[in-house]
Image (tube, rainbow, N blue to C red; front, side, top):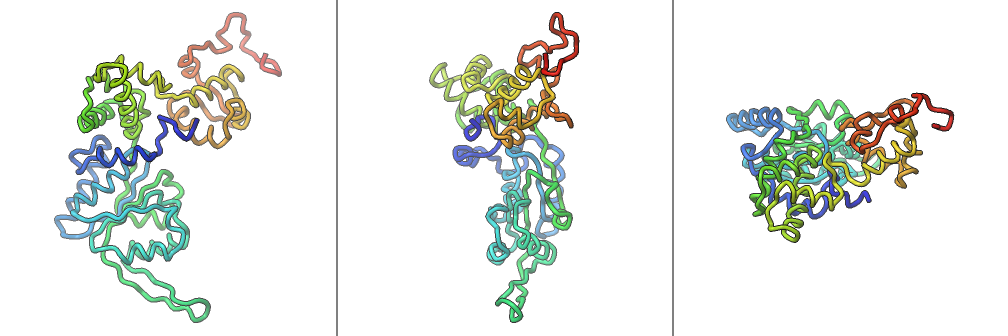
Length: 347
């Protein structure tokens, strides 16, 4: 149920291939993130005016909001090549030293999920970012020697979904930090119209609005839903995406009007129908929906909390009035004959 979630923000193989064609090539094409885009534009323009390498950049935010795209735009705006790697791929300081020693002057190094890099590599990165130098250890034991290796000036672009896990010494070495926010529906409509044009898909304003409303504020999800609606329109309709076509298509894929999928609704349904809206413990709720505790906590809950449908309390998870309304159910306190009190077993 989880691995192939249509509304999951993590990129799968298809997303990676399609996103390469849909990515904007410069800041002028990039939709949304107005504040980050404006600040970043100033940083890059100033660096170009000085003829210098741009400051190191840290981008934080949820998956699918455009961190990788912005890293590529930074390289394009600076007229520099880009090297892409990730924190989990750098398990030893030697891995990082090999990458850094092969960089060209002015090159952009994009390090995704930077908070998952190993500690020895992280400590080597401090010196590389600040002094453009690394010490390569040759030999072992008392006979080991450190050989200083000078690096050409480069720009590190780090991306993280969990900025709080970055140690302060690393975070402080970034000259610019930008936090990516979730997109407003109108911004997602612009993303969808742009993607539809690149995919040669005909879509009207109401069709784009329908898809945007179910996209969880995330461009990656919006583009994925657009492709699935396109498939439906080509097979079941005349190829044009209207509000009705988009609505029927996403109903087939079990994505409702607020962007909830089958897992989200299963969690809410169990919380409301089996436990009267809570409070209920996370482990109990996970058993009720037949999922692992981590799946409920890390996959379903964040969006439900952000939408105001579920709340975490010291006593357990509770449903909000909006959750009852969304599923069309009546809270126990409002049912005829209810006393507003629950017995020992919820009766």
